[in-house]
Length: 65
Image (cartoon, rainbow, N blue to C red; front, side, top):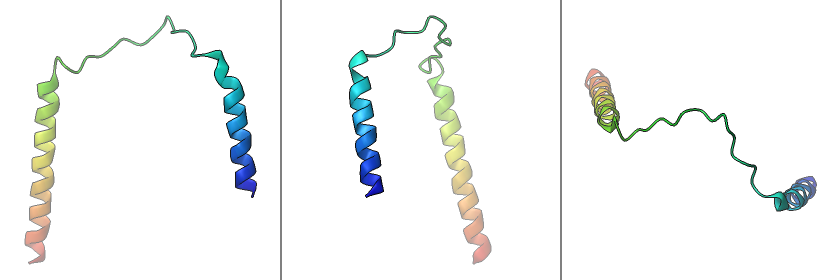
């Protein structure tokens, strides 16, 4: 019952404050960092991490046998 009252209160609070619209964009935004320029680095790191995980899993199963 308390949870229902809490949820109703939060819903009403959000509904009344939602009419203001989004805030204006900030002028001091952090610089945008594009990932398209160096996507090959992300792919290489992913492949190396996958190889590491497979190696570690193989090593742990071979020790158990």
